[in-house]
Length: 318
Picture 1: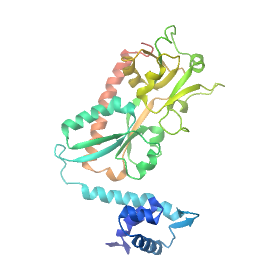
Picture 2: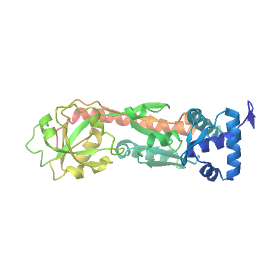
Picture 3: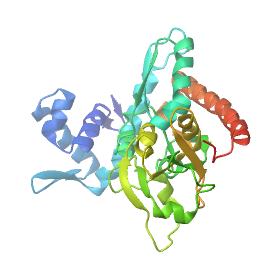
Picture 4: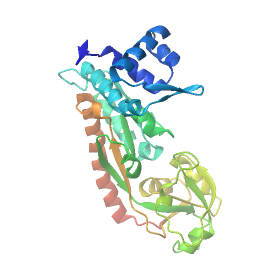
């Protein structure tokens, strides 16, 4: 099929070439011969009047024009795939579909577990594939491998896709109950004098959330261990004098099960704002929209419970 003298079949080849940056790998991905891929690349170069891929040493690099085409080409293909998969009438009870959701274990605990239960009751044919947020989450999202992404605002703002703020939480500091027995409050001196467990969800160069806001007092806090999941936090402060800074809602649930004590953070830290982000091409997909509505509904309901609970249970209790 041609559109404005362009063979639309070449879009699929172009997408593979832009991502793989290698004719052989693109051929394997498309299940066609290398000569066919090379011929398609030649036709694409003629159409755009640009080399698109150029040899640099042993690898091929994208030209500036090719780099500018990456997003629009992928978006066009994703929209096309979505359009042909959409059915005119959406019945949750009869649909068979799988959605990948990248989310931290914190949000699985406080939000997504209930979403999974409600989806199972209303649409047993829908499978939610909950995945740990990968280090290269933004790149993977742009490649179309994630259907729903829930992450803090400062990361979500980097993506030019539909998004909505669905969750907000405060921060508290967690300590072993025995180590905090004689403390009436956690001061900044206490905070800086003790070792810390840092929760980092990216690579070793990424900041933990509190480090976005931690003022500099001429002293750095002493990080004595790092973890990439919230659920392990109480296990690493029990029996020590260490502190972990984390989200209130999950910390309060942990304080019911572990011998830990919670204190307000001794420095100003903005509330955590979690955003749900989804690909542009899924914006009008009825099944995806239904799933987003479920997530937002549960978040709104639970946020109301959290606000009431926070008023009745101040931090600092065991």
